Length: 230
Image 1 (cartoon, rainbow, N blue to C red):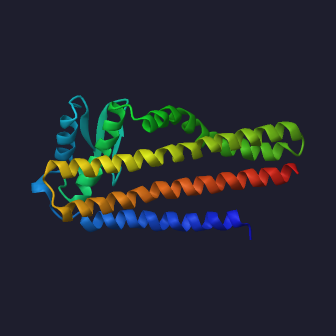
Image 2: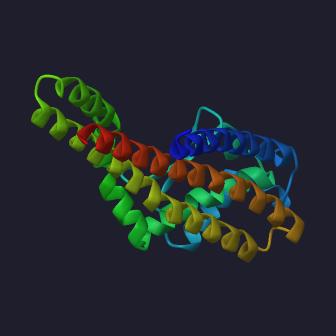
Image 3: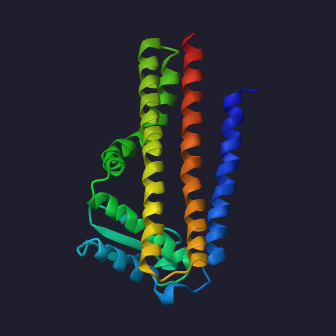
């Protein structure tokens, strides 16, 4: 069996396990009150203000774990399970997203590079496989054109892999910032901080899984295309 194919299957299973772990860990600590009853939104506001980010707004959004920071709108969007909850899970996620706002404010190099990659990746994620598939069909009538299209598609896919690579340190750094801010607030016991840390650690593994899957898929594409050209 192709070792890369086997690794791809392993990473797929790993991704499913990680997604289950994130959901179960979040739910496990989501019914525990902490931090003197401060909600995710209140904690986020406190950290933002402490860093002088008074112009960054906080909004509630629908969905489960749909939390994110929008640098263009300068808005922190927190899901319903985070916005009004005071659980270690909620405040950990809220503080993590604030970490991204602080990264942008401080011009943290990886997040700046990641932001510049977004339009490229939006295009690449839509057209990489289209170019590859069309190119492989065209090779039967026009080998040169087909090879160019496949190469272009693989290059686009490589851009998404690079995006995953840059995203990982951004997420790990945001989590470190979050835990530091929660500790500095003085609102949380070591046990509560430990719960938030477990949630953020589980979430971080989803980015590890995404990067591993993307790298292996890229290597498989390069190998398959190389074999066809040979």
